[in-house]
Image 1 (cartoon, rainbow, N blue to C red):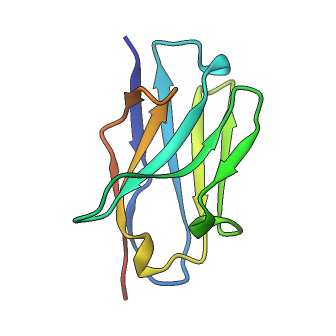
Image 2 (image 1 turned 180 degrees about the horizontal axis):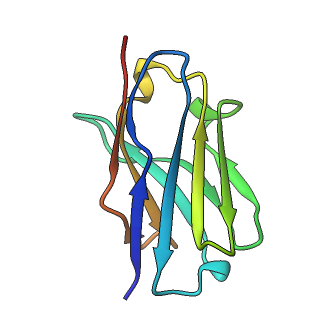
Length: 112
C-alpha cells in the first residue's frame, strides 16, 4: 500500500523560504515519478514541480527560478525547496506519485 506523508508547511513572510518533504513508502520509490501540486482556495489543483525516476525535473512557469524539487533515493523522500515566496504561493501542497497516489497535503501560508 503506497503511503505519502508530507511535512514542512507553515506560515512564512513574503520573501521567505520553506522546504517541504514527502516520505514515500509501499512502492519502488526509485522508479516512480514524483510531483508536488498545490490547491489554493477556490482554485483547481495545479502542478508545481515534478521529477522523474531518473532525476529529470519540470516546473510550472510561476515557480521557475524560485522552487527546486529534489529527491533522496536512500530516504525515499522528495523535497520542494521554495524561495522568494509570495502571498500567491499560499495553498495546500500535495505530494503525488505517478500521477495517481496522493498525500494528505500540507498548508503553506505566505503572509506578513
